[in-house]
Length: 156
Image 1 (cartoon, rainbow, N blue to C red):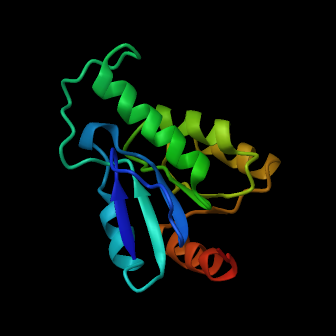
Image 2 (tube, rainbow, N blue to C red):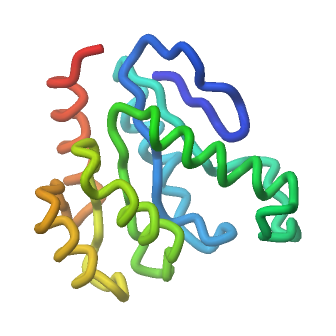
């Protein structure tokens, strides 16, 4: 397993790549990406992780601000290039960006969603997943199992 964090380059990946989309919310959310990295440590995969160890929460969130623009464009480029996209909705967050990204990539054919009970817009997530035939799981453990299965059937 290899992890590439934003803003590092992910060009020329020769393994299955998985974008880790989901709740971050300025570090309010559980650091589920670290758990997934550990749970996939024996898997031959590249994780594209938008969560940055060096993120500055005071950065102006406007397109004209270079650091913000770099982050958002890295995420969108990584989602586009990934073989699989994971969206995890932490029930303790609102996750508006994850909801937007789910909408943008729902019909890509490469999404898997984990939306535990208690997420404030679970019904919306369920409907989008149903309409777009997206695998939807309720628990983190189910996400890991489903993701490992999808990785095993993907070929690069």
